[in-house]
Image (tube, rainbow, N blue to C red; front, side, top):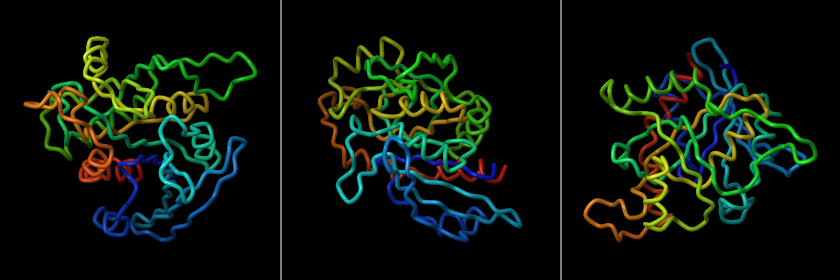
Length: 262
C-alpha cells in the first residue's frame, strides 16, 4: 500500500514518530501539517512521507476530534463527512481507524487490541453523503475482510495470543457524550454488542459510500459500566480512559507498519 489513512481518537493524539518508525525500519522523510478543504468544512491532517528500504510510502493522519485551538470536539459534534471526504481527497487507498472502546465481552479485557467485524447502530443519527437523493449502500460486511484478515494475524503475533483467541468483535455505537449506565450495558450485551464507543461506525458507513477499504483497530481501554471485576459501581473517567489507550499502542504500530510494508 502506497498511501494509508490513519484515524486516531482521543486515545491516539500524540505519536512518537521518529522513535517508532526507526524501530520498524521506516525513515521519516518529510512531515507536513495541512488543511484540506471539503464541502463540509476544513480538516487538519498530518501528511508523512516515509521510506522503507528504497520504497517511498505515505501516511495521512487525522485526529477525529480535531477542533482547531479549542479542546477536542465532543463525539456527537464530529463532522464525519468532512473527515472522510478529506481522507478520500488526499488519495488514501485504505483507512485504518484506531478506536479506544469500553469492553463488554469477558474475553476482551483492558489492554487487549482487537478488530471490529460488525457494528450495531441504533442511535437513529444518519451518516451519509446522500442527503438529496435516495442511494442505498450495502453494509452487510462493513469492514474490509482482506485487511481484517491480515491485521488479525499481526495482532495475534504482536500480543502473543493463541490461535483460538477471539480477535473480532461487534462494536456498539452509543450516542455520547455520556458514558453508558449499567442497565444500558446489560441491554447492549444481550443484543450482541461486545464493545462500546461513540464514533467509529459513522466513519465506516461513509467509507463504504466512497468505496474506501476501512478497518477498525480497537483498543480495550476500560471495562464498560458495571463490568469492572470486583467493583460494578466503578465510575468512568474520560482522561483515564484516554491515558490507558495511549499505553497500548505497540500492536497498533505493528498494524500500521504491516499495511505500509506488505
